[in-house]
Amino acid sequence: MWQFFHKLGSPKWFFGISTRFAPWFLTGGMLLLVTGAVWGLAFAPTDYLQGDSYRIIFIHVPTAMLAQSVYIMMASAGVVTLVWRMKLADVFVKAVAPVGLVITFLALFTGAVWGKPTWGTWWIWDARLTSMLILLFLYGGVIALDRAINDEKSAARAVAVLTLVGVVNIPIIKYSVEWWNTLHQPATFKLTEKPSMPAEMWVPLLLSVLGLYLIFGWLACVRMQTEILCREQRSRWVKEFVTTGRV
Amino acid sequence: MAFDSFSAFMAMEGHGPYVWSCYAMFFVLMMVMMVWSVRSRKAAIESCRRGYEFQAGKLHGDSIESSSEKSKVAYSAPSAAFERVDVSQD
Amino acid sequence: MHPIRKKRLTIVLFLLAGLSIAVALTTYALRQNINLFYDPSQISAGEAPVDVRIRAGGMVEQGSVVRDTESLKVEFRVTDFSHSVPVEYVGILPDLFAEGQGIVAMGRLNNQGRFVADQVLAKHDENYMPPEVADALEKASKSNGSATAGGAKPATY
Image 1 (cartoon, rainbow over the protein chains, first blue to last red):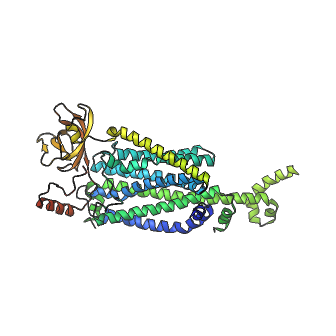
Image 2: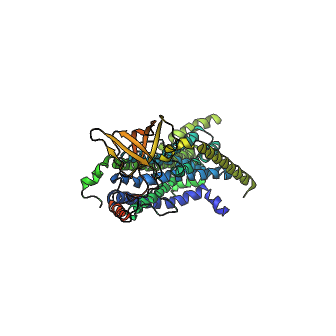
Image 3: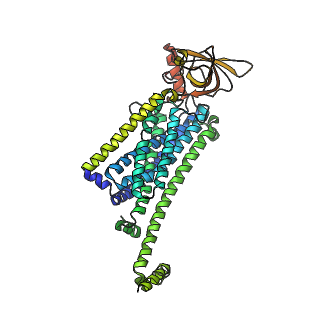
């Protein structure tokens, strides 16, 4: 098991395998996401209470779920950076932090636009919305901290500590709707229960969630490759890849 | 289809502006991010290549000059700069 | 695992544990401020301050909505199915406002225990369904004589 783990830390190995898988992530992700969005927009039935404004759910829930998952992945990579000093973990954090920022912004934006017609307000300082805003700032903080420190190794460690400190926010986001009174409704998808909506609503939602996760996988591959190319410029295999196109 | 006509689909019972602005923002930002990521990967490969070519010009200044006409023009600037240093070292 | 890595991992885990405890205690101490609104039971028990801008939340009681014929004034009772509080509001209500629907109102509690709201927000739950299903559920619950109206369960308001 450790052998595989250390292999995972090899930038060359990752570069090769990600080149092979990335196109599948992209095609699968686009297919699922577009299917989910079109199904949700045009074919899913309207909601008895909210009418058609609820169709925002088909992008709000995927972005909100991914925003939290990306942070959890970043924090796990932070542990790997701190304990094993694995370069690839740090490459991952740097590559996906901007993606996390954009996705969190999208979750907040779609939530605000959905809130206006249903709740009657764009924004309210309830626990769920506030903790989600903190997540946005955490992503911004990770990016800023990384840019502020010139030395690669100390930047990696500082960023890893920040992601770990910020990860306490994730359970707060998740359980805010259960622990406190909030305007935001409880989760639509729970791991333990069946979804609180009929299949013609949750199937397109599930498709767009899976699609967005796959697209994130593709984005992570492409962006990590960029970071690896910049860092490993001097290694022989990068030179070989750049000149011959093969890994 | 949950809608009777295309105009009903666009209007979404009056919620159209909300729904469509969300989807527009989502797809525009996602596309921008995807295109930007692919471009910066290409730029990284390009900058690596330029680095190698620069190095090659520096290390084998003589051999490049004796090689094809095209590469001579392309790398004349770095090799020329190197030659000056080379002369001073002599 | 290498002993140095083991040591680093322990440090990281301790850091996380300590941080979680600190945050847990802080949020526990601040829970009253983190709660967005007071529910009717808290207001009836006198936990909510009088004449201070607060939020009150709950379900709009069935059959309690009285609309003024000449102005935008509305009076209704907000309930959590054990206590209820009278609310008055002048203004435009959100589309989702209806009897049996969850709301959060911003305003002041006056001396008579009435809540004078200046903003009313609608709260919905995580149950989404097509209108036909909602109708069918409502019919079923009516024929059963059950108190839950609108199809949705009353637990989340």
